Length: 203
Image 1 (cartoon, rainbow, N blue to C red):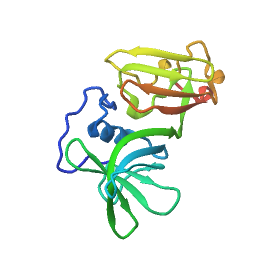
Image 2 (image 1 turned 135 degrees about the horizontal axis):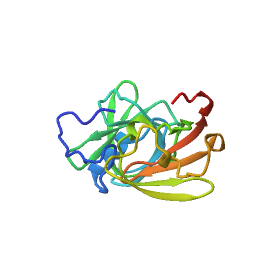
Image 3 (image 1 turned 180 degrees about the horizontal axis):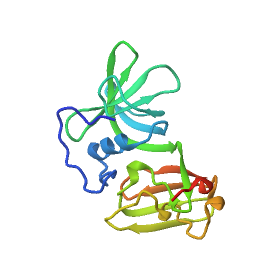
Image 4 (image 1 turned 60 degrees about the horizontal axis):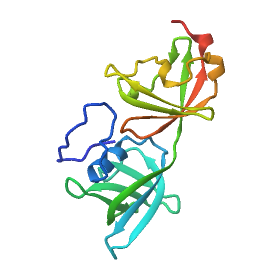
C-alpha cells in the first residue's frame, strides 16, 4: 500500500516494523503493514460532533484516494480510507463511489481477527514469508500448545528458518495444519498455517 504523497517519514532500521508510538505516525505505519482481510476496529473522533465513535471492517489493498489503507465496511458498499492530516494526524474519510467525505480523526486501532497465511514446511525448515525475511528483534510465537519468545539477531530470519515454528522437536508431518500467531517486535501479528511439503523437498 502506498506511502503518503509529499510527506517524508523517518524509516525504522528494522524491516517491516512499526515504531512503538501511539501517535498518528505509529498508526500510519501499522495500517500500511496490515495484511489484506485483517479485520480491524477503528476508534475515531467525529468531525461533526467531536464524539468518540468506532468503525469495523476489513483491510483492502490499494485505494482510490491514495490513502494508506482502505477499510471496507460490511454494513454497506461504502469504503473508508485512512488519509493524512499533517505529519502526526491520520484522518478517516468515506468514499461512496462518487464523492469523498472527511468524517474524523483516527485515535486507535484494534485488530479483531487475522487472515491465515499458508507456509510450506520441508526438512529444510518452514518457508519464511518473503516480507519477513531479514526481520529481527524479539519474535513471539503462540500456538494452542505453548507460547515462545526468541531473540532474532540482526542477520534476521532466513528464507528457511526453523525458529518460525517455535516447535523445534517436531517433524514437518507433525507440523502439518498447525496454526500459530507470530509477531516480531513492533510489527503487526500474523496468523500462519504450516503445510507439510517434505515429500517434495529437493534441497
